[in-house]
Image 1: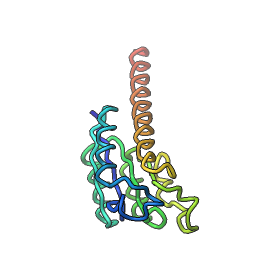
Image 2: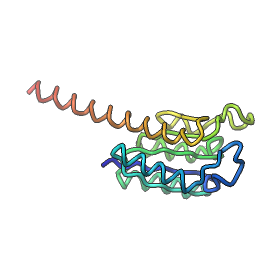
Image 3: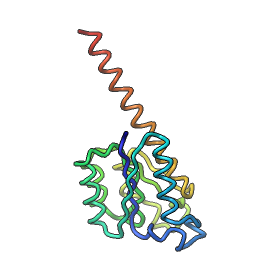
Length: 162
């Protein structure tokens, strides 16, 4: 079973409480339960982490490397717009990572239009409410299965050559 890590950045533990018109009514706990259940149905073991502290998120990313995590979904929250340290941490671990946002960051205040972390990810999904996370799971499913298929094809080609 492939291991997927969901990382929630600052203030996401307040889902269902803060700015419901922007982030919806789904609670943090309900979102995590949904992701764990959906992940299981896709053959994933989903682990969840949340922190309001940049360093703790970086520690979690580095730990993911040593724990052989197969894929990551990250919502960096406000760190999206200015955390080069987070960007570097994502790049350094070489684990397929999808950046997600509940709101469409490009329809919000100007300072939210730039993501410094997205360039270190395989893709970014925003604006679909909590479905952004589910779309992230689907994206990782496809990415990981395509990698596996590519490895199998490469191994078959090597076997055929011998």
